[in-house]
Image 1 (cartoon, protein in one colour):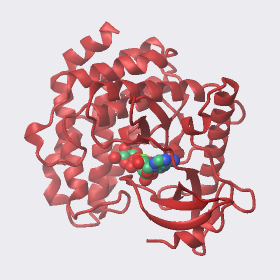
Image 2 (tube, protein in one colour):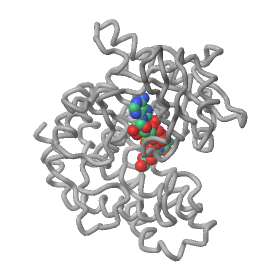
Image 3 (tube, protein in one colour):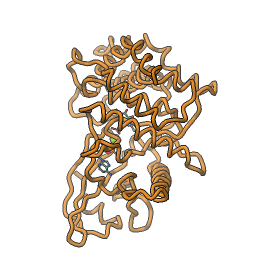
Image 4 (cartoon, protein in one colour):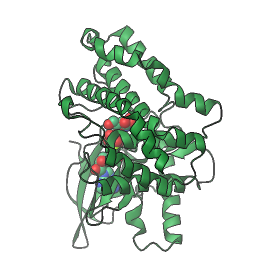
Amino acid sequence: MHNIREIASNFDFRADFVHAHGYGSGHINDTYCAWFDQAGLRVRYVIQRVNHNVFKKPVDLMENVKRVTDFSLAQLLEAGNPEARRRTLTVIPANDGKPYAFDRDGSVWRAYPFIERARGYDELETNEQAYQAARAFGAFQNLAAGLTGPRLHETIPNFHNTPKRLEALQAAIAENAAGRKSEVAAEIDFVLARAADCSRVTDLIASGEIPERVTHNDTKLNNVLLDDVTAEGVCVIDLDTTMPGSALYDFGDMVRTAAPTTREDDTDLAKLDICLDRFEALVRGYLSTATFLNTAERANLAFAGVLLTLECGIRFLTDYLQGDVYFKIKRPTHNLDRCRNQFAYVAAQEKKMARLEEIVGRY
Ligand code: ADP
Ligand code: GN1
Ligand code: MG
């Protein structure tokens, strides 16, 4: 636990710090919910330490976040949205006016208003939630398409370059830093059997058939907050990887996180499957707002789920082999459990591919 009272004193909150506690289930940043007394009213904010092991240039990252959130707020205000500041993250300025502050150790911190009466889900409860989440991410892409000015910084170069992720896995296998290689022979074989799949989307991007767009790149279900009452997608969060990418990465990661019958780290693989109703709700929701997709993008929507799940499994496996240096873990086998879960989910999607294609075709 960091000293959040001290961190908070670097930001222009116009409120008195009361207390803070760790919050959320993100795998990357250190997130706190901090309560303040604002002229007699209890209000809360999110205060986060940007993980600089993952994001090597946190100041560039915050420049992206500031640009995207300012643009988003301007659009909402122009449209007369009565709760514009609940519909987008907004950055609380530091005392020096910057959108971040450093702590004594040189870490970058930021603060956002806490989006109230809405929640992110690690696991869905209804098809309506899937529909709304996908609609919100599609709308986010639509909004991002209007962003003018220079290209956003690539906060993690080659983030969704699956062939590069495969190369990183091969290097981790060769290095065997944590001595775990012999435990994962079956998982390595699983990936190698699908090596050709890894380059399908990057090839389509290289040939120009799939365009570069500004995408979110981490459309995991808990990165969109859904209204507690209406389930409507209120606010897209976790903008650290919003940068040039492919729309397929965003749709694929929704399928990865919103359509399986279990959580990402569930070890009971016998009950793991893809829920076709959820998948259909995602397609319907996403296509209702992502109206800009071209033919090649539409033709690869079902495959995108397989690709992003495979890629994420590759990343968990790489991290397991490297000794858990990237993702936060809660148990020694956490990354291996996640990897096995992702690969089982890849297999489940492959098995139902004809049904998935048929659903996309219907829309
Ligand atoms: P990570 O990169 O570690 O996933 P996130 O930015 O996604 O970090 O934040 C972690 C969690 O904190 C989110 O999944 C969400 O539950 C919660 N969260 C983040 N920002 C807000 C906010 N402004 N309002 C409410 N909850 C938030
Ligand atoms: C991380 O930050 P979070 O928990 O929303 C990761 C994603 C992975 C996801 C797997 C910057 O997302 O790429 O798909 O874990 N984010 C980063 O659950 O690496
Ligand atoms: Mg997150």
